[in-house]
Length: 300
Image 1: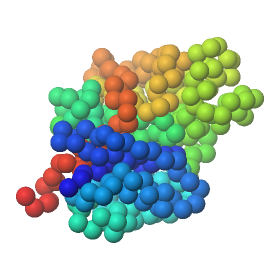
Image 2: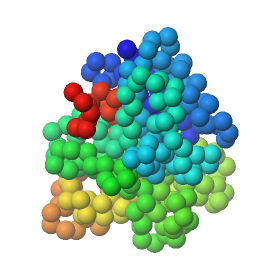
Image 3: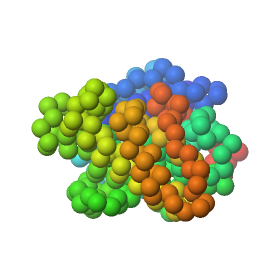
Image 4: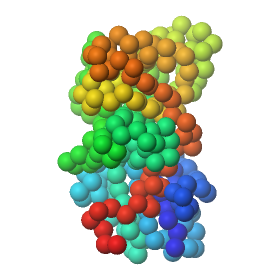
């Protein structure tokens, strides 16, 4: 029977078939539409599954989530923001399948800990910096889920110096300042004429003043948030993936400077912050691991 992995992102869905080593292949992606969101997701899953019966599905979803009820409420998907029962919907689609569900940050941490830079590291933070900002915590060699499944939601650490409104309803969250979408929005408010985070990063590397300022702003906020999270969690390793994290020196130089400025406690000396080597989608890779790992409350 086929094993599937599904990544519910802020702007795209990705799904693929999970192999015996938890690797995900035959990956397909679709944009998240403004309406008919589940129909788009359903069509993607059916296309990936093909005619073979499905035995398990691992789902990594943008949050917040309620892992207890299988509901996701992504802040950037208006049709689902109030909560969509994705586990029930996938179970109706594949009634004989085992469905395992976690927030995208937990899947990210799972991928890094099993397959990536955090193998053998007992305590660490994994982050994604893309359309939004998410994260997952590894503590004592295990990925933490938290009371409702939202542990590691680092995108909503409040960073000093900004009062930017956030989609969560708060103000000054690092996601509202430093995500790809937020950085593009800020740059356009300053007169930049581009439209994507990829273009913004390219313009920054080419020396465009507004683009450079946008990435400096984002990197500074990220570095402050990372230093705060590292102090709270007592970790010395942080791995960052996601499309906007690929922006290069215009983002990473101010990020590292801010980490150095704020990580002053002795136990944070030597804090390593590095770019993820998982380039094909760490959330999807983690959903693949999730699909193949039996949990403690499941029958053998």
